[in-house]
Length: 73
Image (spheres, rainbow, N blue to C red):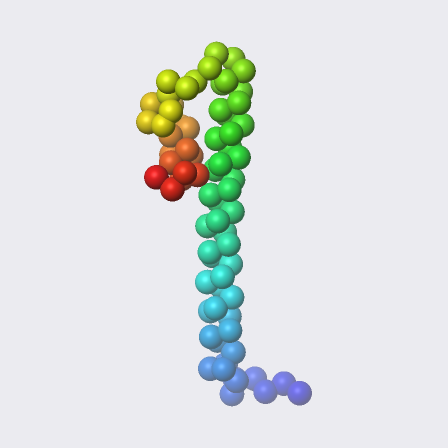
């Protein structure tokens, strides 16, 4: 049985809570993805010529934000 608009006030908080949970999960997935992007770059560079002198603050501009996000900086 469909109750329609009379139940909107009861159902809305459920959707708001689920939305917040999904947004938090997406934030964590973005962090994980940035870690994976950084690690792919890192190991490629390490195989080429080593990069220890670049860590943690002398990375290329396109890599620094990825590193920072993945390391809570």
